[in-house]
Image (tube, rainbow, N blue to C red; front, side, top):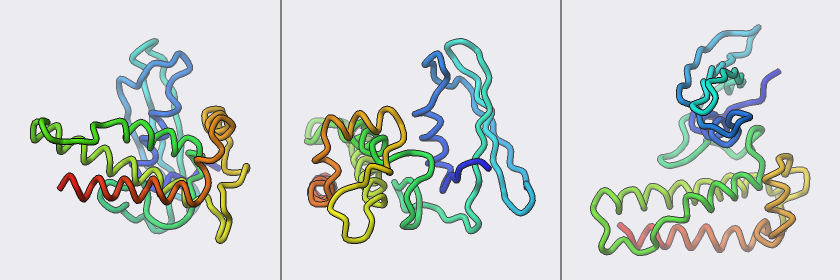
Length: 179
């Protein structure tokens, strides 16, 4: 049975993170939805811009689909089955690399910086979903990809509840300043 994609945003992020074997990005993506028994399945056919190879990736759809909040990746409190805690933190880092000061940016650049910071905070929210109630750090079982395990091994303190909350609070404060 395919893994659950909680939203289209999460499915596309997964496809971006797990691209063609050659490392090339998708030049084209098409999707088709079908019913397999009582489960909706979406199948993406991707064609690599680098080597032209085609691949198909299938995901289960939620029983009750819900749109994520603006700038979010998935609704609800359940952690991802597609993207592990380490990859979510990596995604947060990539989006957080935008300028901290929007002064001097064009209106379009400032809007993009706010959008990126919102996405970074939302990715941190996804890491937090892996924390069991009362746990102080994300458990080892929440890391199943090479990238995720490497990030945890290199910087285990970044997966502590207190540190995740502090960084998320900082992103929210920066967003409030950028309005």
